[in-house]
Length: 132
Ligand SMILES: [Zn+2]
Ligand SMILES: [Zn+2]
Image (tube, rainbow, N blue to C red):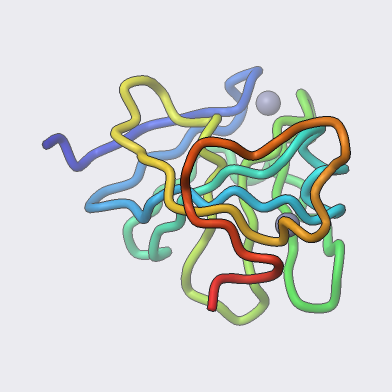
């Protein structure tokens, strides 16, 4: 298995590279994630020591809450990153990765908050709030 993965925003101003194994993809259905991404959030995460970002000055970090911030490309608007304050791990949006990403689904979180216009029926674990 190739353990280097690459990805980028839609316009290419921000590119990134991860090394090592990536966590299964969490699908977050909370209203903040739905509003920011346009549907629901799908992301893996990686330690900051295994994440290289090029074009970091093109990223706007928006603090949607007191706990965390969301990084998106200020030119094309692509949602790219989520980071808890003080954490040394960064969540990276699954849709930003180049194919084949090697990513697999892990579970759905905050399903109590999910949108009313879709169903979750992929058989992955579902949690009303965060993972236990
Ligand atoms: Zn961009
Ligand atoms: Zn969320």
